[in-house]
Image (tube, rainbow, N blue to C red; front, side, top):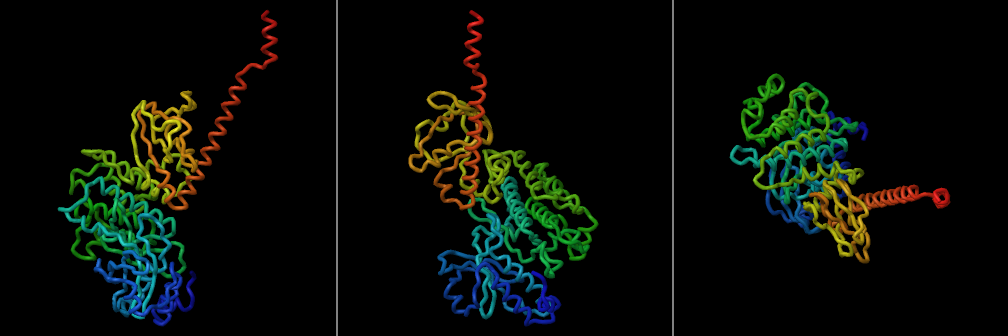
Length: 479
């Protein structure tokens, strides 16, 4: 959106009426256009249950949406927040940031904004409700998360920020209180009010964020970059690992000086049991020189994943992030988006089979299919071996696609110990349309590959057989 004459006056604070008009324009362009409501209409729709939190921008409440029959989180502008003459321009821009992003960020680890609305008295956002609270509850030394669980959370946060960065959006206010925890290890990044839009022509707010998590270069007027969010994730990780911030200045100016001229106390000086790989990842992420930080979220994720195997566990614990990493590197999922792989992780069952174990048997009925992660398996029909399968191989998809009978056409037996994932046909049928389409395309490519392989085998067999005339001639000569 290019700045208009009206929006330029708004940016300089010359036209408060234009500012109100700009707010209304963004509300109208949000995910769901909603006319200004009377307060009684708002109260009729939402049953307020409890306050979840409040800050300078507004209040967040748990409410029940009687129209859509679900619990939601309502973020309301606080009275006077948008009218403060000293802060109004900055505050309005940050509020409009969240309103215009409504519905645009669709990711399993980002809080979804369903609607951006307004009443005669206030604006509000209708958001996904995440019941587990924020990471802030785990920033005290007596209530730290297990390291392996924290690695899983950090991995998901990085994945969410990788997605938003690809969408041209920098968060700029990553901190424990802006990361929510849901059920079943769900992680949700929230509050994009301070976001920087990389491809926007409009004037954007500078010097936003929370001081301990702001990168040093921000105080040198550097343009925000991906490394700004990387730094914030590093500081957040440091605090969640130790219960303390890397810099402990007592004043604003002192903290800026420390960030620009001093080094943070190494993690090992505060806690001895942090794996070396994790210490490396956190130290690199929050390096004072942004050129030394990660220049891709994938590299950051790879180093976090590398830290998981070094964790000593009493029992085997598998995390979504480790599962994602395994699937992302399989050829079968080459053309799946990250969102689709996360969805696949959610509907997959992870199994191990011992050598000699039958995984499926010919003529059995079943609609599940499997993808091998390692090892070797044999495919047989009528006790005759047809082929061998290895890491990345998929089987059982024919029974899934055969909606009339769901009958297995062959037997699959483990030759070595193998790991594999199992996906129930019904789970895939209830998955998103995009995931079903990606699996359908992968199955089609798999069938084409098998047909080509069969053609090559038949050709090699035919070429190996001697020509009938040549064989007869040779027989006569020998006679």
